[in-house]
Amino acid sequence: MPLEQEIKTYNELKNKLLKESRGKFVLIKGSEMIGVYENKDTALSGGYKKFGNQEFLVKEVLDFDAVNFFTRQIIPC
Image 1 (spheres, rainbow, N blue to C red):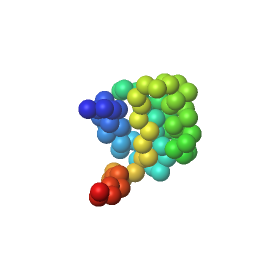
Image 2: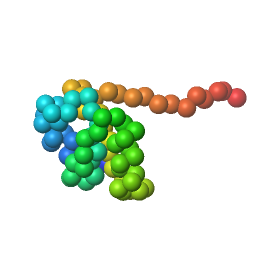
Image 3: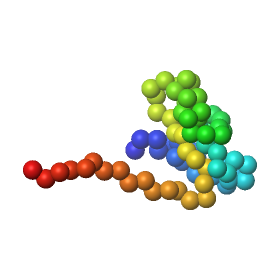
Image 4: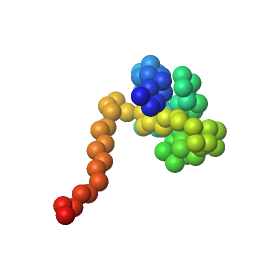
């Protein structure tokens, strides 16, 4: 599963992050937390600068995990 290690790392650090960085964005690569950023754009920029096209996780530190649903609009023929 993509980002499996990064998600595991986030879950292990979640309680600490909620106390110290609630509402901010964390950048994680593998089992290492790279940094905490004020906004998503800065976190993404830091990730691309450091890792290029390699996988990394940027996640907002929240009490709950928001579920995002994306779909393609399919028009019947």
